[in-house]
Image 1: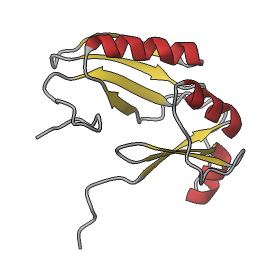
Image 2 (image 1 turned 180 degrees about the vertical axis):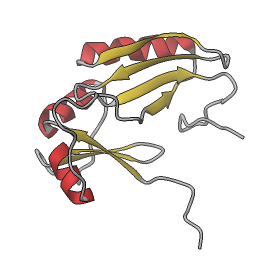
Image 3 (image 1 turned 180 degrees about the horizontal axis):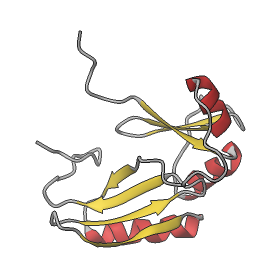
Length: 146
């Protein structure tokens, strides 16, 4: 048996679905009609669906316990958006902050020849905003890697 090498949906655990939805709206994202106001929000992207769901409900659905209050904020995962240029990275980071997010790591040149910075949404979900000159973007904005 083989499991397909892809993902269909990433669900981000959030404290308040409506507040988190408002943040992503401020980034210019459009939610799917199948979203259920205040319960779960879906954003279709060229590469998969991003869902926002209350953290306790996500943990319950997965049959795991939520982290305790003093747990470290780092969840050992980051999502990434690749952009066409360093300038687009800087602009995206600026827009992220204006929308209410935070910079985790300022954008800088990388050892792999690119340019990258990290931001977090109001719930601490981590995103890398990057330009990788070795991964050209297709017409959907997805990196073409070998």
